Image 1 (cartoon, one colour):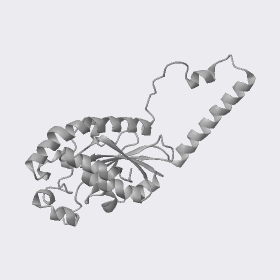
Image 2 (image 1 turned 180 degrees about the vertical axis):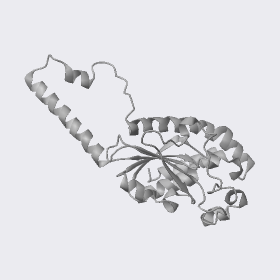
Image 3 (image 1 turned 90 degrees about the horizontal axis):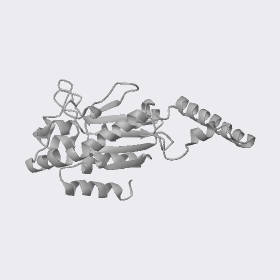
Image 4 (image 1 turned 60 degrees about the horizontal axis):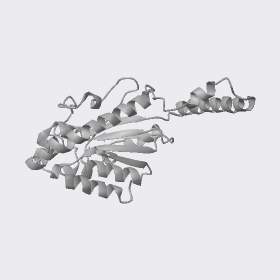
Length: 250
């Protein structure tokens, strides 16, 4: 699952991407029919949208985004026009100075975008630390989760979804429960980053994604879910997850 975290400004986001290891390791899924739908329909539909989201958020975080000029005169060109009255110039220079101050203030306070990868990985080789829910899910789940001796791999995913250390770098949080808020220190991390708004996507929609959304909302975060960047074992479960999320949570 991915989480995009955002500062106070709504243009600043953090994205959380969840449970990609289960997208990589097919034997985690117990039902062949569900596995077929997930890998042949749901994930191929969602992953390109996840990749687009990650690319945009990283570019905002790292300051590499380039804005295409819209039709007609843009604000910067108006500020640079010479044929302005004295009063107009005073207003515009004041505006430019305030923008600089705001930008500097946000930089100093650490506001911005972050990309957080959360994925299933036990802390112990025998996986004894995973949640009771996962232990009760059967050996095909509990005995196949990544662990320190066989860490999660992202190499089968598009390059845009490989966790990156470039520029400011992504954040990686292995988890051992359905909700990332229950088995990691993500709330502490988001607090340190001064993030208030989260954009969440990943898989499975009605399980890890929905659990993260509900916990985040209860903790006071503003939460958005990118519906077409989420995947589930069936269309019905995807829709059920979105319904559970949208009813008073997002």
